Image (cartoon, rainbow, N blue to C red):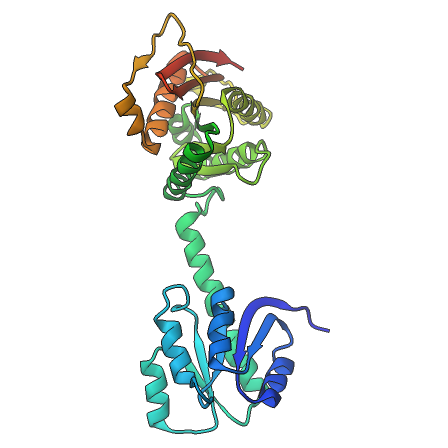
Length: 334
């Protein structure tokens, strides 16, 4: 028995016999749903968007053409391929269907091999489309999400944090002297180093809601919803330790020491925090705080990274965005 392949198909035909025949032909796919009226088809499609619709042209009340037209006018369903099924072989009929946005026609009586070939073609097209889309949101080298995707997630979590009054943390982890590493060992070794470090940092994440992104050439960022300053510091320490455990040989610039991370971070907090006396907070008015945006968290994390970088390797520095401004919390060597 062939394993079922996840590819959602909606069969639409007012003839129950045709539905049964198509269900048998397409038994290798799942889920396969069916509708015997146009209205039922539109309802089922709206409830769960299918990957493919096989649609009879001739149906009472709401014709296949009407269903196709409604699908193509719905932004959530407009990209779903529609294969018309018809017992009428007419160039005019096919032209009308294609003008409405249909992808193809299948003629009755149904031939199992032909139906399967057509459906598998659209399954492959969907897989290719999904791969292309994932390339837009994922860094192919390291498997981390792209910076653009990370910033989109940050915008969403920022709003959620504002509603729930829960903290939100962002870490930026930089490979120390990565440009020198590339110059010494070559780009191929640099890519291998990036992949190993990405995997090590990813292994320190504990929750599916944590998001790791490729931030720049030799740096990554980790978005941590509902994470306070101490939680962010703990994860940063684990990340530094995980990279140290790789024992990746460094460069002359690092006196032969192994590759390590420098981490800066920022945490959005909803509790007042007293700043360190040595580094007073930047005061922010109520009007300024009301206008805070996700970029403020990024800017604070980058400032913390710069401060940690100046202090040398194995440094973690965190700043906290609070109701009274930005509190600098000092650096900590791990």
